[in-house]
Image (cartoon, rainbow, N blue to C red; front, side, top):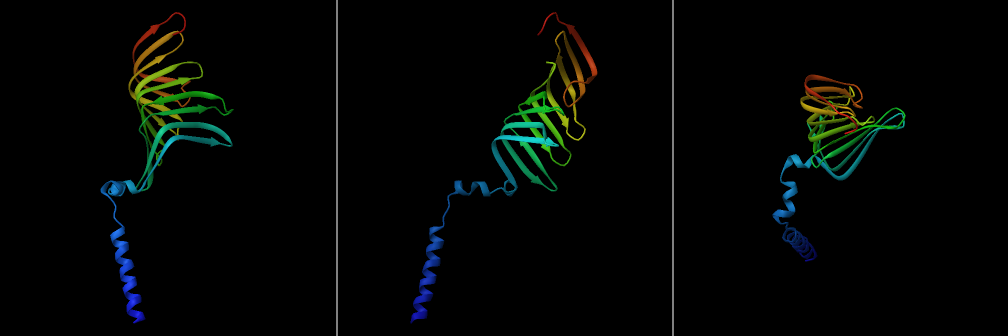
Length: 184
C-alpha cells in the first residue's frame, strides 16, 4: 500500500511539473536560432588594450555583439564606435569614429563604415565612408574616396594608407588640393 501511494505521488508530481512548465513563444524566441546561442551581447562597452602597462587603444561602443564562428570571434559594433589611440607615453595620438564596425579576432582587422572620421594630434582630419584598421601592422587603409583636412589645405583623393596614429599618410590617387588661409 505504501509503495502504491509513493508511486502515485511521484507520478502526480511529475505530471504537475509537466503541466506547470509552459513558456510562451516570446519567452522562447531567444533560443530558436542556434547561431544566437554562441553570441555575447553587451551595452555601453569600453575596452582597453594595453602594452607593458600603458593603454594603447580604448574602444567605446554603445553595443557589442561577439559571435563564435568556427575558430574565432567576429565582433560587431552596430551602433557606432569610437577608438582613442595612445602613443608609447600614454598620450592620445588620434581618435577614430564611425557608425558601424566589425572586428575579426583571428586576423586583427577592424572594418569601420559610415561617416568615418579620424583626427590626429595635429588636428588633421580624415573623412571617408569605409576604413580598414589592421591591428597587427598598426595601419589604416581605404580604397574609397577620402578627404583630408589640414590647417592650410584640403586634399581629396581615392585611396589612402596611413600609420595608426594618422600622422604619416600617402594617397593612392589625388583628385584635387585646395589651399586654405587660416584654420578650417
